[in-house]
Length: 356
Ligand code: NAD
Image 1 (spheres, rainbow, N blue to C red):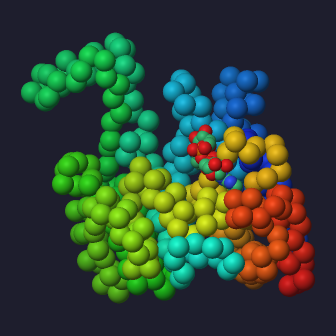
Image 2: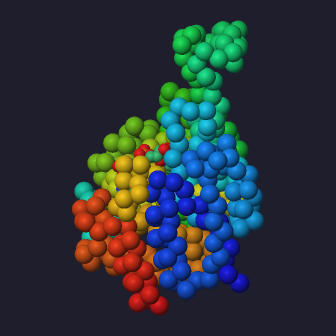
Image 3: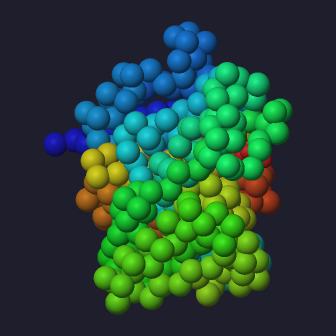
């Protein structure tokens, strides 16, 4: 039976890197039926919503999606499609492996980290109060009533919920992931000294859960110190467990440690569905020019193949990427080369075919 996969090309560089990834998956010989679904800016113009219900329904049917990045316009009335998708499908865990790749110049050799980011709570929960709105006036009155510090009348507010149940499942996921992938240490990042009742819940719940996983070491570090230690020597870390916002920021920082956003893949995983997408965004500065590095998207498709049980094909895709990068002849601009997206994709497709 072929695998039914929902393909969301996205916008900006999304369609370019998605096309590259599809060609690489097809080169493995794994049988795939792509159900292509549009989401993002173009759909918003046509249909008044950037995420039509049919996209969610399509993923509920296929259970697996490969997704290109989607632009989130800053400061408009529309929520991020990416955040909405993760919440609608309860994709509570983002998994972002960050490892040194052959032939990619970077400050450190031997980096091998995985960021596990909680994906549904925290400041990304979508509980926002618009500056000057009736709701925020009510909120201010309620806070005054509760004896809390006054909010300036010209402030906007975003609420940061972090629950015990939401933390328990991401912590269990992180330890389970560590165990299955023979990893030795889970390091949690927090700011519980300042945000005692949100990051505090994350820290203390995780500490309690960690006791049930004595085979994997557990450590907790304030996230600002974590940032310093990551750029000082990332090799001391293994699995990083982070609430939503810190996970977003630290993922990009980690990408910078191994050659940039063009090479770091990702997966959003829940109990029922999984959506695979690179860490990078839609890169409007290079969109439509054929310059984007497709490696992050191609490695995301390798994660997808492994998730579907196609481990041999996933291994061949990873090996092909390593071969092409290690060869050093075909490289996109972000890696210091002059190749385009299509050149890189063709070289990886050829390497996958040779390994078959
Ligand atoms: P970005 O990741 O799109 O780009 C940051 C920088 O990295 C840019 O200079 C870009 O050219 C470069 N870059 C990114 N991917 C690259 C690739 N594959 N090859 C070569 N260079 C690459 O981040 P941004 O500019 O902050 O965000 C642009 C848009 O993407 C925003 O609307 C943002 O909300 C959205 N975004 C979407 C997702 C997603 O769909 N999951 C993730 C992050 C950002």
